[in-house]
Length: 241
Image (cartoon, rainbow, N blue to C red; front, side):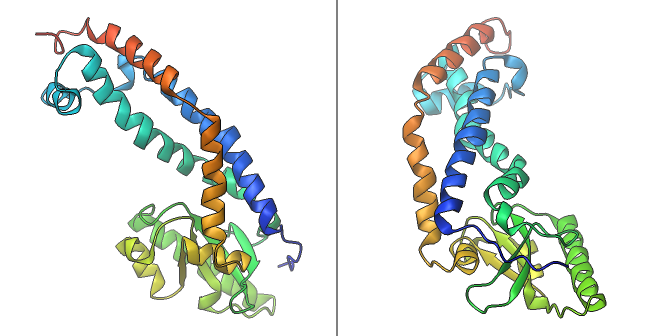
């Protein structure tokens, strides 16, 4: 297990995170939005489509139905799915200076709070693991501890960390709480503080990524996508009266 001593500085992390959001998250968001011009991208619920359209727009014409279908995907599911799916790419590009040589670990870092080396698995948010993930994470942590023992490197349970990119302690799921009984779970601001030593880094990072938002105006793309989907919806019997 090699010692990893060359870490990126905090400004470098922010700049790489901004570039990642611009090149990966935003680009995929645009691509996924364009796909929504086709009815085939939706499982339309005939019991709810007109209700949701009326709830949103006050009428149930095909344009309102298209909006009720598209908005949740564009503003919720699509962007969150994209970030989760590209989490490993974020780790490899933005946190590459912390890359781990230990099987099952995403990064290794010197904790700026207690000065100990941490062996860390990265997760996106406070509700992004399931029951099976708990077993897998435990197995990886036990493997790291055993490997350290073999190599004469003492690794305590507290040195095995689940680092959650965003969220608050009170938001974590029961699965994370189960892991926290034996290992360290660091959420949002706490994770970035232990990683960088800057208690305000989480805010700086989210603000930095927020600056990228000014580069994107999706109103025209949304209007085109809604119009295209509306035309297809006119030809569906379950939509029309």
